[in-house]
Image (cartoon, rainbow, N blue to C red; front, side, top):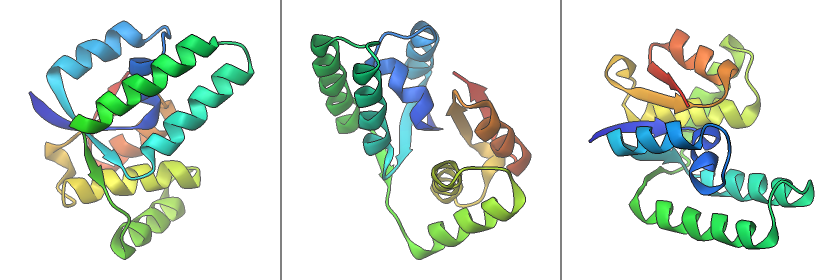
Length: 142
């Protein structure tokens, strides 16, 4: 398996049944997971939103949390640093990203030490993938 940086939008379907779930599970068989420090918070936010709007039942919500904890035991997590924050701010000046997406992209950049041509970025967010592609990442839409 080769390592890849996974955006939250690519990981949520591994924990809850969504349309891209089968495709994302196939990616999981090919790629190890590297993530940004706040990814689990973003995932839990998605689970809570899905529960509130009725797209998850309470048992499904509990199962999603259990799956998240299982994923966390196997992923590599990029911690916040001053350099990562500075890179996120630079990405905000160059690409039309939300703050959280700029932090995801900066974490991926940090993960591969700026040598993005050799790194894979997996996301379900087309705008973030476009920015990652422009930066030079190999991108995979989940």
